[in-house]
Length: 114
Image (cartoon, rainbow, N blue to C red; front, side, top):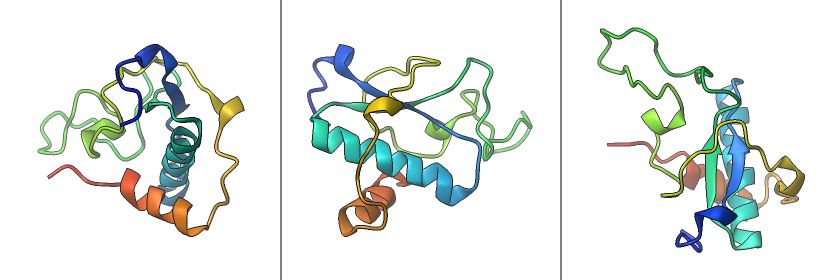
């Protein structure tokens, strides 16, 4: 991704517990900002104990993942670490939701782990 040698400049966007479309719209917003600000991006948690709505807390399930966040199911957006609680919403997208670029970024951000 962009400028990954400098993780001090990473754009952090918090995950939300909402519907699938809202969750991935937020990822697309973060990617749009990363492209236009030329900064690395990472999705983070609001607080340490936050658990993403679509992760399971059943430790016996094949789908269980200790992180309990988007990284359990999706490819990482950046090698930069999450900073729990950090949110750069003040620099958020400004992108046009529904534009071809934004829709592509939404699809890109939702790439599943194999």
